[in-house]
Image (cartoon, rainbow, N blue to C red; front, top):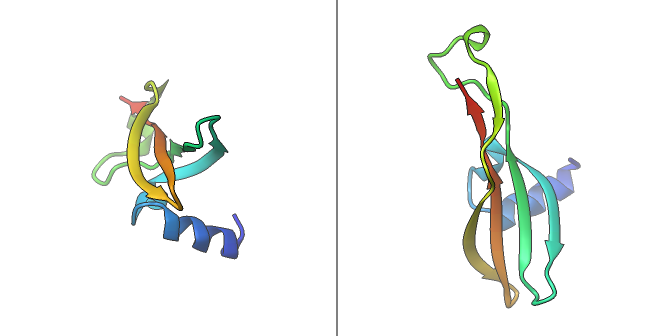
Length: 84
């Protein structure tokens, strides 16, 4: 992600979100809603050994309504990885 692009995205999204999620897609619906899709980064939680964790894929997407941007409704679609 370019520096200018990342700066803009960090200003639009909630603080700290890009530390744990990667932006995968953005599109506007027919009704004018801005849909922002994010996928959880493959980060190992502190206190866990990476060799002991195995990804079991992703859980279903979760939609979170965010504050409007320039009069458009905003939904953040988050995809979480399931680790065991």
